[in-house]
Image (cartoon, rainbow, N blue to C red; front, side):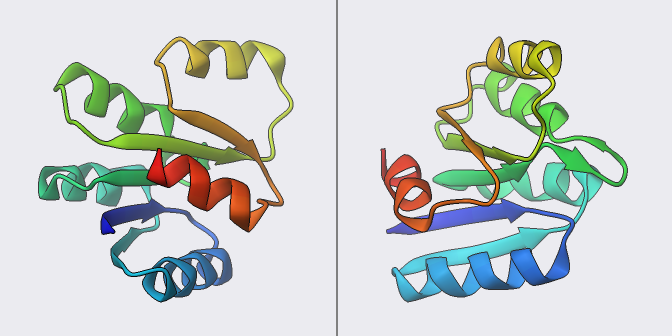
Length: 114
């Protein structure tokens, strides 16, 4: 399927998502912070599964870098936030999908495949 980068601070969620994507045939890299996620963007993943709220900032910083640098990957945001203003700001960065947590696995996989 390609390379997926999962940026999620919750260790259990990160682990479960990694196993899910591996089972589906993806190569997986994970990060637990904005800083670590930014470091891994240069691997040119095919898809980034991105938590919006991370311990060192907003996942929007990673989405912004992907869009500004013209990386050809899908970005799927997974979030629990219902803050309309925050979601509108993130939507302006044009993620390929925004999925509410708890994540529906089928919806997530479809969003990552495009």
